[in-house]
Image (cartoon, rainbow, N blue to C red; front, side, top):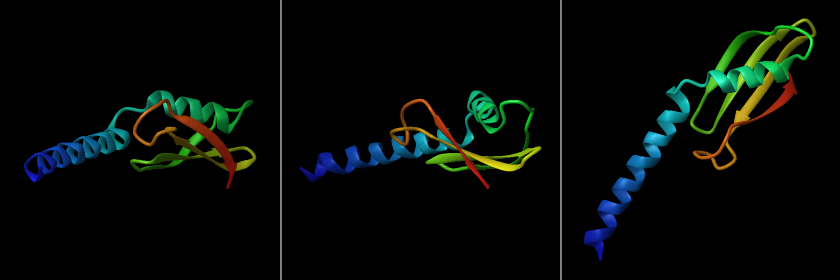
Length: 89
């Protein structure tokens, strides 16, 4: 039984690592545009800081009313469409 578990576990960990790298390093222009639209309805916010991890992306935008942070996450960490939520900073 151990003969089958080790290779399967190794492949599973490699797949999860690849998915985590994709979450961090892939082009997420559409997610950034969605976050920008959420940051300010009536202005054009400028990106002042960006934080990416395998779990979520944090976008900090400079707006006329101050800095706004928008966090975008996938519903199932590695799968699903990014969902963004705005919070004041």
